[in-house]
Image (cartoon, rainbow, N blue to C red; front, side):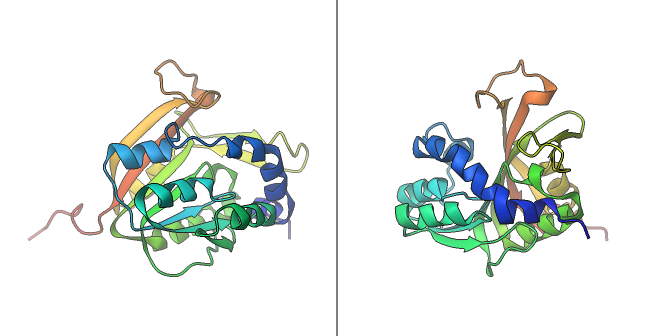
Length: 223
């Protein structure tokens, strides 16, 4: 059986991604981070926060400092986890992948920021279900990812010839189609600069969604 993209990231590419991006993580700015913008704009005060694909936990550390939240990270890169445990000891780290999240319980905020486009398509629905499992009814989900008008598949340029792809599509639409979530807020803009403006090409368009899980109120009564 072919190795999945998720296994490639868990075994090697996750560490390489962290090595390439470690310096930019050291200059993380909570004031310009889109998930944190959404938290602040909508006056969320999360008590329990989980991030899937959290890298070294720098965003979770900022959330914990600002809101005194209990924070839990799920990350495939052992190197990122080791760095995070040294820098941010109050963040709880778990090594794992999105389709099999090694965490129990529910959270009033779950963040999945620029992760879903890397997930092997064989594991996408399992990953969506795992994320949903962890969002408490009435809680919030933040999704950040590419936001093209049409779903596209792009070869992953760091692993040419390995059959690894970046899958760009509207991932919030999957949660919304379940009728278990509703949109609270959406930021859109340009991937290259991570700035919000209107004139962005489809290939470079990104979005950050704030969704709320409401398992009852979206259904009309039929008597």
